[in-house]
Length: 238
Image 1 (tube, rainbow, N blue to C red):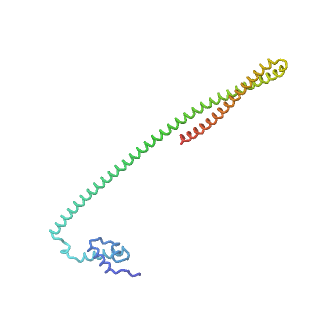
Image 2: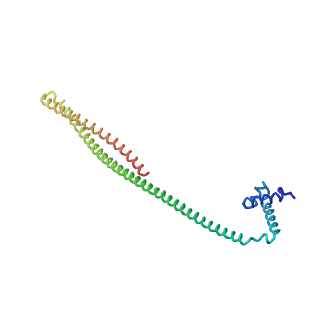
Image 3: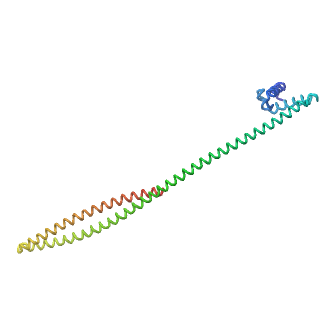
């Protein structure tokens, strides 16, 4: 059998020292005091020592005088009242701390709700502004598309008129060529008519070119507006 690492005397001395210091004599306290050993074994040694000591005491040694007993009873009553008051004070303090923490949590929650409501209102205003901008851009695109359609129609009409005038010009030039030798006066008149028609053709060509430029500008502006509309639609969806 493995011998005990610490003698019973050393364990009892450690228990006496602990009791003298007003500490509870437990197995772990004895183990710490002696520097090692099995806590259960150390406690068994101490309990055996206490039981043996109590059995050796005479009845006179075990009985307390009446005065001492009264003092002990009064002290226990005072200690009970003191513990009760301390427990009440601790409970009251705990309740106040809990109420203060609850109030702080409620305040933080209220601030969070207010901030969330403000952010929601700001987001709603931003969405409304984007929707208004989108409606305006779509209206501008519609106007530009109508303007482009009118410009294209006018350009086509001018092209038809130019073709007709060119045909008339060609006919006038042919007639002028045939009558050139016999009818000098008529040739002059035809020349004037040819000149007038040529100027008219030049003017119509210039108008046609201008109409084409306006159509190109309208297409570019419509494309830019479509890009803005797509960007706004992307923002609204977000």
